[in-house]
Image 1 (cartoon, rainbow, N blue to C red):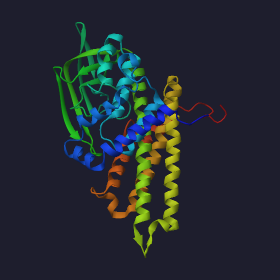
Image 2 (cartoon, rainbow, N blue to C red):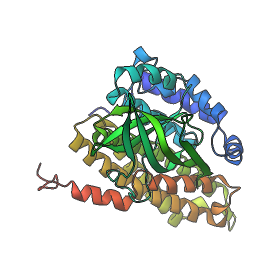
Image 3 (cartoon, one colour):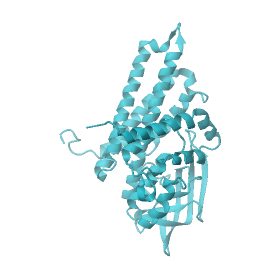
Image 4 (tube, helix red, strand yellow):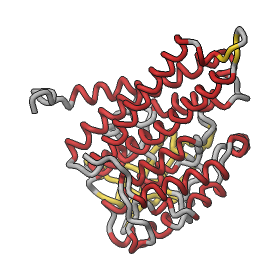
Length: 371
């Protein structure tokens, strides 16, 4: 199998990397965190690169690209631990493009592609933990539209987004709805997250909503898998930069008159970090390549990928902090922020233990050994 990237993908990677290096340095990120954890200006700069339209067809003003292109972008954003929730934009673009009626697509997809509207997925509920099929939100018909009652938690930039994709039970089955933040009955409570980003709790009280699809469970599973693939790619970028920072530190820090990077025991630990990074990278590729497969195969693949990424993220993050010593956990030093990001990504869309359960539950009789 050919794992080389196309010229267009390399150009896309180069464009995003240049923006991260020049336009989103550590100091700017710190200022965004202090200002609340989200910058509409920074998100607008991503829009100037055309990135919000990555999964949106050209007829709606998008780029019409696919999962591998999304993986390339998320890796580079991960290297800069960018706070703006671009994975949510990929989810919204994928769900609206794949499941929404044409009328809804025509209204929202051009606005998302242009960066004018930020649409995020609001699906987490307290009682559900990582089991997205558990849903207490209720939708009732209200003339030509719907009325939603729900409480959704940890919604990325929920108090800054322009609209939400919300799963709710309608007529005994899960459906997906689009709710505008400016609608009546919508309230949010925003807060900063552990990695310096922003989230909010969303409350809907008889809020008007537009039906996105009645096949809500399948659509939500697909949206979460898009999110898992994006998180896997982002984590590879975070780990890649974490390893580079750690190697640079070992080659600079001296003990007994020599760089500690010359100590064999520490070199072995760096080699182990590199091994985990490459395992993670290969599984991120696997996730991207399986994202458009049939549901059962896609779900199995994404659970496997997220499990390996969780193992790798924990190992690389912890080793980086330990190799730095006390400075590795200080807020002033950059590697602590990469460690926080890895810790949060490991919990996003299902932690490692949950994904191990998903892998086990989806094993076939042969467990793939003789298939």
